[in-house]
Length: 284
Image (tube, rainbow, N blue to C red; front, side, top):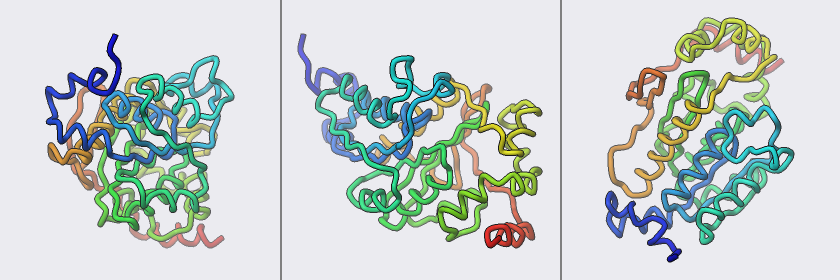
């Protein structure tokens, strides 16, 4: 049995030229968060022929991850997500180069300049926003994928665009303030009307949505939507690597539901006068 890159990925040559395959192979991808989306993207991109990665996730697998996280198994519970994901990637392609890093933002900011594509995929959305900021600072594209319930969205943030504008968030807030705001029951209730979009489009149960507003439960997620979202995001990474096919760049998003996938322009809800109240909460 012959092993090696060309044997593993020979059918890719039916789509990409040798030059494009080499670009895929050499592209270095930073994946921040190796849970549902980030873990699946790590595996998908490895199976697509990417050979250079930096993975970052301080978290350990727990039973509630089993429904969607691709390297979560009974025998990996309690183990670090990034380390386990790296091991699985090497089982696919022993030649893959995977660096496992810490989640400290200072460390991440040192890593971003030496990668080609940034994928902020942490459960901590405030942390992902900071990673996307670092990508912009270093003129790197960021691929953002976020499944919520039965809705998945994917977009490429160009290096010249601020990520906050596409999510209706106040610009330039520090990580600690942004994290406090995004997890604040007070803020979620203030923006209940705007968050209804995710409840309706994502087919959330009303009871779960109300508990989410109270910060008592996380976003609802199910494996098919999470992995479909990760697959589309991985496609955008390959498009960035090869320069082949048109990118779906913000404000356009992939829009994935049980009824199909489409591309739409997404405009975040206007916060208007609520922005002043948000800033007051940030100062308190």
